[in-house]
Image (cartoon, rainbow, N blue to C red):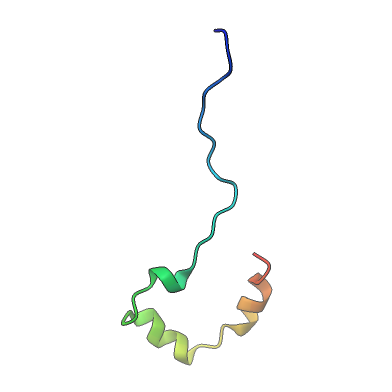
Length: 47
């Protein structure tokens, strides 16, 4: 067991956008128009 260890390391941080993953005609977009989640969004903005 000589030499450096060869293991792939997963990224600790990555970019993910729900806008890119939720289709335009999806039910969740309709619900979002009527439910105020601004408090939750503000709380999670740093993440």
